[in-house]
Image (cartoon, rainbow, N blue to C red):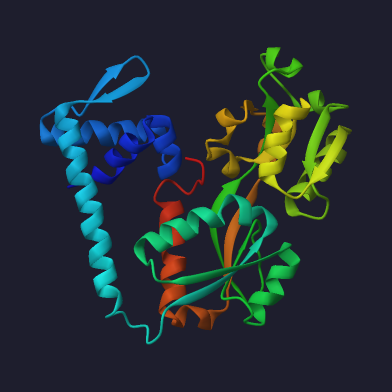
Length: 303
């Protein structure tokens, strides 16, 4: 029965918004799926009390069946694993840039291992210019980078486009402004990603183009550390939109402001691999899962 998985996610997250972030679909799209399921079953699954959702008795029964379906599907995949075309336990080595390691790779590993739980996945991290030779030299099977490349030795498959967003603590002078533009970043206390990464290069190019000079208080390699320090230090930051689909915004008392000039800082997150890599079934499946996941919802990581 269609949409049971989405229904179960709403129940478990206790929120349409949190479930939509987890499923990587927009909240209106998720609401439509739940409404179609209710129409198909002919019963109301939730009682809506303001912003809160409470399960009806019919919803509780439906959730029990959804859990059972997920269990049976997992059991089926595990049973069929023994008959896969792989002659040995599948393993994949992924080379991820610093930004994709934090924003995209965990999601792809979760999706893939739900379908193929016995796959051994290893990750190697580095800057993009370090990942590319690892792919060429077959030291990693797949590269995941925040860039699009044209290299005759590599196949580059774009997954989604991404741009920078301004992240502010909930209590901040810019919160009172109806519209924020790039000039508001001049001399603004900020915590930024370390120099040498793609996103920091984008930031510095943009600052130079608009003659903006923020007051950089810290330079850090970790998105998670940055977002936690924004609220603590009452400073602003710039982070890729793909990272902000997580629940950490509310948990860390920060908000996002969109600035037109920042939307021009677009980067394309891509998979890199050599042609012969797809001859390995596990690698081909991982690539197919990644492409399907991001393109099924319009090609955006944060939809």
